[in-house]
Length: 634
Image 1: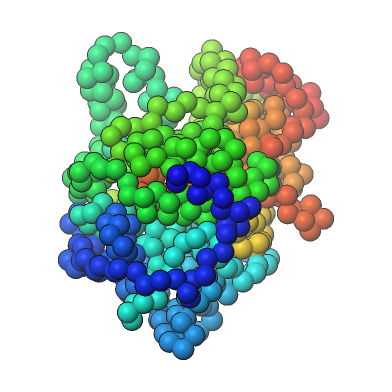
Image 2: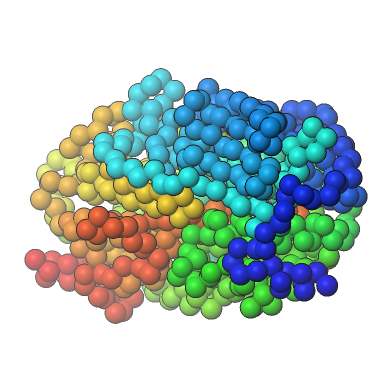
């Protein structure tokens, strides 16, 4: 019966609900503890939530309470990035409207008569106070002492987009103005107010857990991700130990721990992870009793998922998706989403991101607290092809150990290789590592910034024989966008990165410079450009996400020659979200990496053609042979 309801919800936009004539709801208020990020950080013991017509698993929040929560969450989460962040709210009772303002320039309006929420400028409303418009790097431009830090934006062009409106009534999502309360489902506000910090307000009937979506996944998964993205170990090293080593699982795990703690940075990472795990909100969130979802949560969860994906999925056009409601019905995913059993609903989300979106960035991360087990999903067709191609490249490279070295010279040619764009953090998980201090101590990590800084010293040393520099991204699966911009600044000097926000239709092009020699200055000493060097980039179908963005920027600039095979694509910044029943997953979000041609923005999802095709992977990694080939090109 529920599925039949969905099938009749109209085309693309759902049937319109008469919000102002809806009958009165039975409203019950209950207060819950409200935690932020960790179990020892309790904001309130009694945050009020509201439940309509007996549905105790579908919380609503008063907009005024939510504004108070945002004024706490944003500055507490990132004091520097949201310094002086303050929202105010004005109730216009006659119009049944609430206007939430940030400063005096940007507003978020709740129109309860029309069933709409709209922003004058959605991006600017949640913009970091120390960031740039549509900035994808996520790091401040100065350190705590106010000195220039890693990257500088030397030029930019911004198109600020349109007034952005959410028509909740078209999706049959209630906005309830009743009994002096102004109620909106908490998940709707979570979906559209917390995207900048990738947080979600998780609810399990016992408490509210406001935390990063990435932290609400199995600790073993987050541990492995942290090892790789933190530059402690490469993915290949982890796989070699956990899958290719002999011995039991316990013995292989012990070997992994020994490898991690063999360095000071690794030991600090492990200690910090164990400390954080003890305070994680994942354990109390998942401890709630299992149960079936109410009919109200099933219906709302489906509609909210449609609303969120219709708004934020960045590749709708190329996937031929006019509405996610249609996609769910056409593929049969609606059956799982309409099942009161959260396990089956989670399976449906896993099928959506793996089989149907299948874009390399979309994936299932963590189950709902209501689910009995995790989905057993398999990669989609495109992902299988990309994995196979990556396996070919990785297997071929193993035959040439020198091709895995971060820096390697053959005669007049320097090779710089890293397989992920990584950036390190210090003991405070919210802060980027102090690379300037690490450089002075001679302790730069083997992450992207450390590798580049050390390679730059070698290439530009006195009496250097280097004439060719090859950046090997042939096994690079992406990572932190800030380090991609840093890499571009190193090769190009002025590095242009363009982004389009598909939700707001805003656009931005920024020109970055990188402080490669870590002297707090941005000058000609930081770049390979202008030194008379021949610059190359080696790519393959395994070059994905930032491993695709960098070659695209090289192609657009024209000063770097691309060698190898077509890159694997990956146009959108990863976007973490959760379902209304607590499933966490990620998709290709609305921030779409682009190149600008004749003033128009085009996405980079289909990959970039090399200037010179190299068919054999053996020719990629036999550095002597590749050097001879490069020298024959000029």
